[in-house]
Length: 125
Image 1 (spheres, one colour):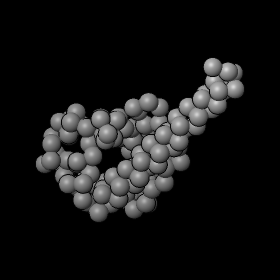
Image 2 (tube, helix red, strand yellow; image 1 turned 180 degrees about the vertical axis):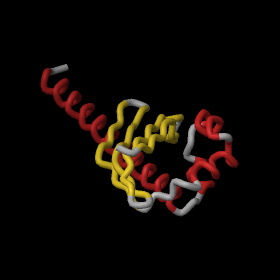
Image 3 (cartoon, one colour; image 1 turned 135 degrees about the vertical axis):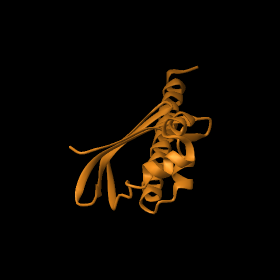
Image 4 (cartoon, one colour; image 1 turned 90 degrees about the vertical axis):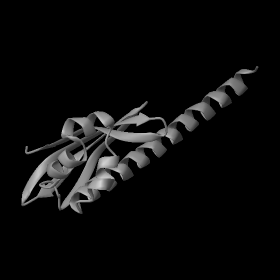
């Protein structure tokens, strides 16, 4: 195989990988917005379904989740940092609740074709 074909195949491979990563980044960004929106509207069924089984267990399943979310109906949010590497993704940004600005971190792990939330951090700076 000539050097030209090897170079072309390499460029095609790199472009395919880059486009795949961009698609994953968009997917995760949309999921982060969907999660925060579900918190805002107290749609516990939607937000709970996005959690990994470990997080579901940690919060006390659906009843515990309803209690946990009851004080976290953020008014607005903005993710300013987004990253995807292999099967791990992270969104970081800010959210507002009762006049306070919180730092937000959501971490996701890909489980098959779906992304699950594996870490949720809301903290005052």
